[in-house]
Length: 338
Ligand code: ACO
Image 1 (spheres, protein in one colour):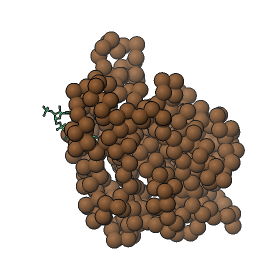
Image 2 (cartoon, rainbow, N blue to C red):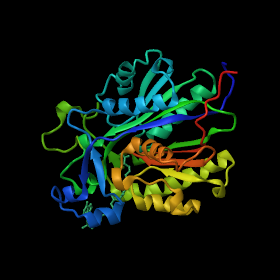
Image 3 (tube, rainbow, N blue to C red):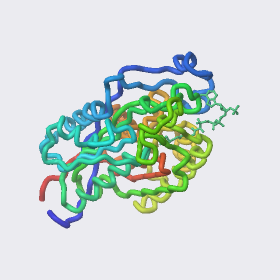
Image 4 (cartoon, helix red, strand yellow):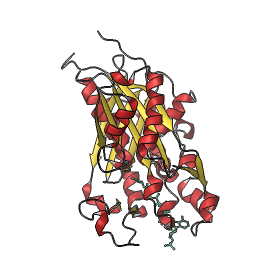
């Protein structure tokens, strides 16, 4: 099959959300905030928090097992594992290698990918290239984040926004004309300072961090990121539709990154979609960065909202700054070997 282009899509999805729920009422006891402020400014009511002994690989593994089972793909048949995360278990080895071993997917190449909230779409597009060109048949892409572990729980500007979770997708060949119709990826490093975790890398190793400096937590210039997000969501959705040759009227569902309801509303208006055609779950989970899109997708598919043949726009943005979008003609029917 080498060098033969084929249609590639998502054969199945899975998700894992930690049990612990942190509500806005809980946050009112931790910082100077209110349920009313959080709901009106962001749309978030509660979020999930990983256990102290629960790391990203644990959550990724649970979501991955679900997706593989639904896809009826054995771990031994996986060719590639990509874990999109900004909260890996550790710097190295990659979380993808840890998941590979736990799954027993010993044939698979494995690596982590860092594109913040756009990570799942970056990962899906990388995986799709390998399958499209015939080098691989099955890839597992997981968006997973343990953001609670890098959240400054004394900073009301950020601690109300984030949550933990994992969403997985098994990617493989689908019938001609189905699956991913187009991808749009982008980055603007001029905005690198707007959203960052400064400490722990080679610029500022953990050993050099002053106690109490709070550089080992997420820092975000919320207002600037907000403006960028609205622009990026709109331009990426426009671009990806043009590339796919699909008009706005043909879109059945928008599956956006779940950061802020006001950002999602702007993208919804731009596409001229009614609210019931937009998949929103940030009220229950907050912003799970790279996990947001695959978890939203998995919920909408398992609830029977998204069906075979629907046209979806997946779109996200995040730290980097980065953005990504894809038009998907939804089909989980695997194409057999010709
Ligand atoms: N409770 C009460 N008041 C608060 C809170 C809070 N939790 N947080 C901020 N405020 C206050 C601020 O201090 C400010 O007070 P001031 O005017 O006295 O200074 C006031 O509320 C307004 O603050 P703004 O920042 O202007 O509020 P805004 O309406 O912009 O909402 C928010 C802030 C929610 C952070 C918004 O800017 C946002 O969603 N930005 C985008 C975040 C995002 O999408 N990140 C995605 C990427 S995440 C990733 O990649 C991992």
